[in-house]
Image (cartoon, rainbow, N blue to C red):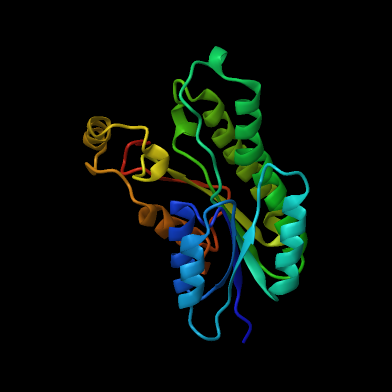
Length: 246
């Protein structure tokens, strides 16, 4: 029996690596992309069981045409690819909009949204009309109400929701599902700019009285990418401990 494969873009990030471990445990092979941090992926690849496959691919999302090349390579090396999980992203250095530089704006849009669109495009090319497929984009809870001094970052994450809703309509009759997981405050290196006191204050504001973990996010991504969510598409699932209540 051919094992299904998940492509995880940004597989070396804390959330991406937690997702990788969860998806692998569910029985899928993995094609993981990374930019600079590969140490944990290397250790993970050494420990994989016989009969399973995990491969890593260096991918700089800011470099033109690299996405097409890497996805083509992945397609050649895995026989049954059915899942794309986009975990890549860069944060914005907190600043007023008038202090945000052109290079910062370009980098945020290049990594957080343009590369997501390109990855989805290449994934759909390799799966459509072959078998059911699904896509999960990792966004952010900031898309719901904005974030002062991180307006460009918020704009890029909000764009993922628009992409998701549009593609749910566009690809549904082709048996491709797409959803967004929107983490709240997750205790990862991306939030190391917060002081311990600030983290404690955020936890206190959250109904569950704690920050989230990478594993919390991974559990929700795994659900949306599984057959258990076969009738779920075009949705945004907030993983925020109840910080946003609708």
